[in-house]
Length: 80
Image (cartoon, rainbow, N blue to C red; front, side, top):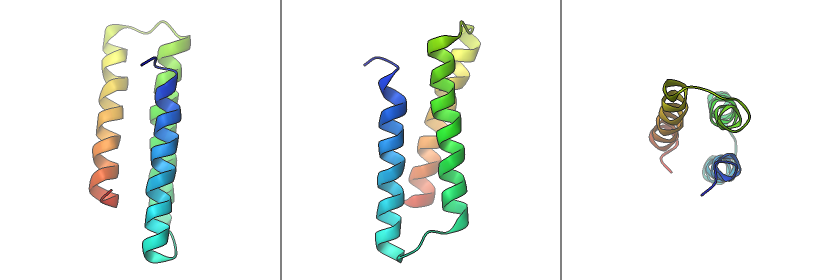
């Protein structure tokens, strides 16, 4: 899979999680929206850095680490 597709998959996943939480509670908490926005900024922004900038191996490692951390955080907090 090309890295260009990862931000789109992440956007779809976060939208699905927020939709599922909205269907369960009929509203979204402020922390859920803030967490979703922060995760979108870090994951999508990180992959845009990978595509358009020549970052080092350490930078690539941190981008991948943030992606995994936010995926675990979304799973733990939202339970999806």
